[in-house]
Amino acid sequence: MWGWLLEVASRVYLKTTFTNYYQKTMETTQWVEQNNRLCRTFVFKNFVEAFGFMTKVALIAETMNHHPDWTNVYNKVSIQLNTHDAGGIVTAKDWQLAKAIDQVL
Image 1 (cartoon, rainbow, N blue to C red):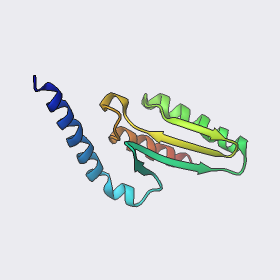
Image 2 (image 1 turned 180 degrees about the horizontal axis):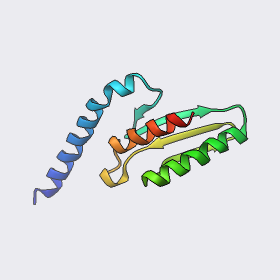
Image 3 (image 1 turned 180 degrees about the vertical axis):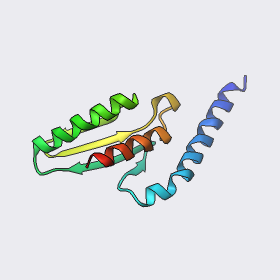
């Protein structure tokens, strides 16, 4: 009967815990947390560089088994991360992928 309440409370707790834990990281990164997603837009010289970046990120994401929502228009790549298995919130898994993506640059 109260299972749904426990589930909601645990999601809120997890989100608060991860948000507090990664607050320092957020202060030193260009990733922004909004609408339960970790977001960043990358701008490159041209389409070829943008596509090359996406290819590298795809290989990392596949290795981590954590795949981004993203779009590409010419030289811009916009990435949004959240963890579907955790109810569509930002978790440590998203921050780990964000860090790996930043290292591609």
